[in-house]
Length: 373
Ligand SMILES: *Cc1c(COP(=O)(O)O)cnc(C)c1O
Image 1 (cartoon, rainbow, N blue to C red):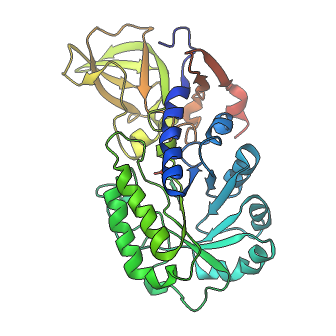
Image 2: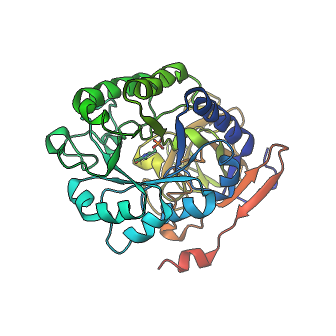
Image 3: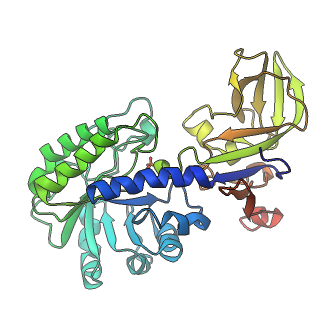
């Protein structure tokens, strides 16, 4: 697999991407809901022509994503930002059909502009139900969260022009947590929903994971459609490209300090920052846990950051300098988050087509490092 690839390189697996898109498209067909790609997780726009054949559009977090979605996908385009800048709002409105506000101050400030343009207005609510444990940085319902308006701060008498509600409270979760969240949304905002035309369930739905309960998701969607007559939107990011990409790297050296350490031509800090931020242990093809297979290594990066380590893995065969290693599930939250810290080069971006042929989409150079400094 991936012989002759120049490393480091992200490789998008077109067949797996299509597999995910087929699942998502089926949910749209079964329920009549609309699914949008949250570009925050995955913005490799070279694949937007493919994605646009299956789902309804894009979700964005600000001006640049709004423009990318508009120019590269050109379907439904919804934007949420914790606050919009005055010097950007007109351009954002020009790209997006749905503008979602995070406060009544922002609503009052921009309401007339949005309505005059014929676009739709939504408000992000905070149902104050944490359904995830351990990852507070990914929990918009954590104490003092800035994301979404709580019931206490919700001004039910100031909804002129507002046609929808938006919530986003999940992260890598199943539909049982969505169901609980909908209970909280209804309990707190049920009266408002009766006056709305649409609701957006946000992202964090791991719909394309093998143990995800899709029938329960579809019941959740139908519940909002039937009870309130709402159009339902979902904006998953991860689910679109889950397990649909790799980061391919080469072993540059093998050193020793209490255990063998393999130095790779990639970096957790630069090329897979979620490994350190979340943190998590990325899956690696043909490997086991430390000690599980005969040869164990700590896998680490080329940079000077002591903590720039990927994890401890084991292999059936001893690693050798020049071996290629393939990290899996690297399409999401990777290219969109990478950086050139320590002067590390950015990995190339390639796609593996269904016939297994590899096409490079992007290669980077010194200019990409220099241009940002
Ligand atoms: C991050 C985010 C998403 C996508 O979340 P995933 O976990 O990648 O599915 C969708 N909507 C909003 C508002 C977000 O902040």
